[in-house]
Length: 419
Image 1 (cartoon, helix red, strand yellow):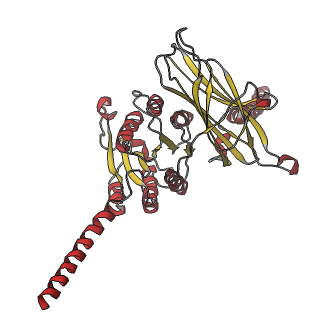
Image 2 (image 1 turned 180 degrees about the vertical axis):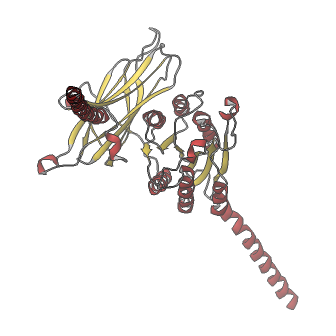
């Protein structure tokens, strides 16, 4: 009896040990393979030494923001970090434009290890954004789950080839559902234009960041967004004019559009909201060279508000364009009614006579309505806003200079007469 009890106790102990041994291993596996994946791509080029973010360097602000983001990563998200311009300090462009590596692999986050890796970074070299985006695409893999890249940089690509916008279109055309969000740490127009192009080509967003808290808050928001289930596209049939167009809310919609056709849709935008729209048109059959896609936001009266376009020549799979249109806050009760914005999608695809026209080319239209622009001051940077300010400054400066010159001229004449 004693032997039997000892054997039973031993068996129970063995089972308990096996259970204890396997449980941590399962827990260490982290999120499943179909969980969302995010890779943060950080610019570590020499210009990140500039000390213009809350009295500290751009690099220091980014490192602190990354530490806060690492602490806040949702349990169900696999996170990785890639750098660009972090290792090569020399002048050889060929070497500098391949300076991008994965700092922390995409997977379950060990917060201590990830923070230690970020702490080692020092501003060093070039800014090969296009090359880094291709590397990030490979890092994320294709084993399921949403795929998002968050690019943080303080300037435009310094290499030229591969062009970052072309790379973004190339990645979008692969059909692996990669979204690239871009964050700019400077406000120059060239950087803004390039980062906006990258984001719009992949259905992402662009944000200018001026403070460390803004940087960490925005990255956290984008990482959390990756954990949000992807909305399935809904069918929507555009019409030949805005008055009869279907009214769309926030979401993703699919349609078919004939060669060189114009399709209209309507969106209600409340005061204080910003409309963001992006369209992708797939060339699912042979097409002629030279083509384009245009997305316009127009008032019901036909006045154009903003447009986004893209064009190309040669074989393509997907052509994309996007736009953003903010509606000002209501000044009184009469302004509180939503504004109807008409969206026009048109293409200039053509094809040889032997190619079938029906059904039309596949169209995917994404509509989002957010509470105001990320950076209200950015709105004035487009269109005539900045130009009018400059004109006013030049006018006042010219007036003052003229008065001063006239006074000096009279003084010189008076002195000459006295002598």
